[in-house]
Length: 289
Ligand code: SF4
Ligand code: SF4
Image 1 (cartoon, rainbow, N blue to C red):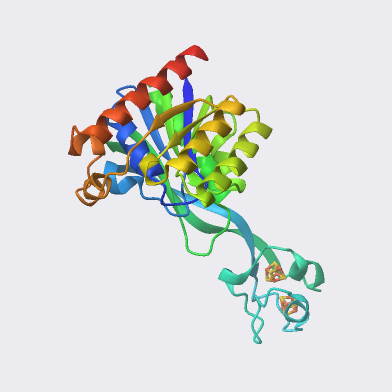
Image 2 (spheres, rainbow, N blue to C red):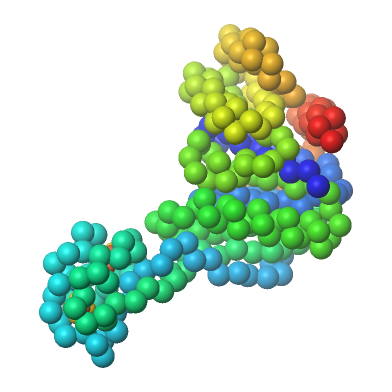
């Protein structure tokens, strides 16, 4: 089974639009939305949820009121203001550091799982999909990305699929590392802007550190030919294949509004270019077999 992740330096570069377009071009894949902090692949793929799994990213303190003697030690020592003046624990603020348990003289504190989000196993018009939602202000998104990837692998086995297409998170943090670790190929979607070039170089550094084969797509390549040339020169020098150069086209937005992939929405230049890009990617995936 092959795994392929699409990432970008920041949100809004067209990463999800391209992932969704790929979904309508393949017949043998499971899709995983690992952009769990701002999931939006579901807006286009319209998954029907078949199973919901509660996700707990961390353990938090719970006080046993029967045992508590109101001594106030936990209140004095909690550095996260997670205990109020009546010595009640404020669940959302607790960082699970364990200090209150250490200072409590009567063992009135224990630790329990806190629900941090939900993961879903679903079906779309293109095939199975694993996705998730992280609750507001929760930070365990790397763990949730791993859970979504595990679900995608299980669903691929169950449905006899031989490819997992992962919509990765933006940036270079822990969730991105969780989304690219162990995959067969990464596609970095970048734009020809100064920040786009800088973001692309930073992610390439991360992928290179983990020894993951990487390709690049220049989205909106016609908005700045000088910067596009700089990306091409950089990729050539570092032997990174540019698998696609996509023109600016506002059908990407209208397709998103219609809840369709670009391929479903139109058979114009952008659709053709994405189709050609998928052929290039598929070839590289097959060569890596
Ligand atoms: S576990 Fe740490 S953060 Fe949570 S209530 Fe206890 S002392 Fe405060
Ligand atoms: S330290 Fe223990 S006994 Fe004291 S107020 Fe906190 S929970 Fe109650």
